[in-house]
Length: 317
Image (cartoon, rainbow, N blue to C red; front, side, top):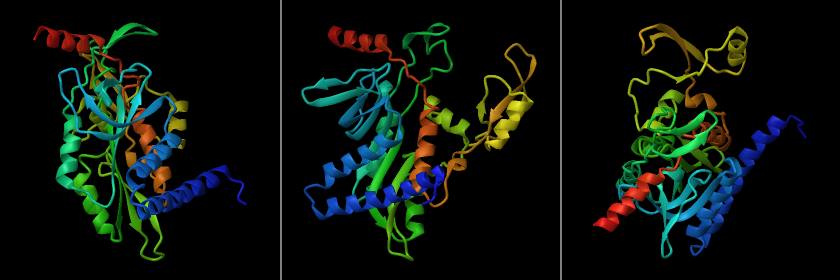
């Protein structure tokens, strides 16, 4: 047996991929199990790869403090550290958008493009408020005065057991739905071995982490993708060497500060595709998804006053 722990991890993710395919095929062979079993399988998988601070909620709807509401979400992944609220109307679960870090839509063999686009647009139309107030290490903070606490939007994931033999079919799915879902996980049949595995499709994989940060925290998708992630402090020569050894790409740009002084800013210009592991889709998903979760406001402060105001206005009406 190979004693290299990285090789063991690599092999384990490929074995997990095969096991998940077999589980899905078993559930599909027994139609009464398919829907709930499929969701439970994906919860079990995502639970194994993302931090324990996240909780999973089945069959919820997402709301905002302006009265907006999404369509039903199969699985909502929420950060309960600062947003412990799941409002309920009888058995219906209503989750404030500020609590939601990721949404997962589970489909079988049907991928209705228009329906999925509408589902994703409903979530994107919700307005997270950046007016939460909390005590931080440096004092009391609110997103109104703290640029790092902008309004975030959830990472959207589509999982499907629709099987594809042709790479072209997968690419068509990626192009049609890739602007609405950040990750698409779909089955593919290997033409040489007839084995089936899950592939991970990311249309914007070639975008920088800076582009992803703006998309997830500010709802901005720059076509130019002109900059990466600005570092708080520029690294010295020794630190820059460590960055290079770890394949972190640094760019330094001359800019002007608000008071007109010339300054140099270092940017991390890595792209999401730099985290791709060849021939291992689920290990790739692990690294890419967790990196994006670390770019989302962490934590997103809950805007108690915004929701209180919405309920107060409702009473007045």
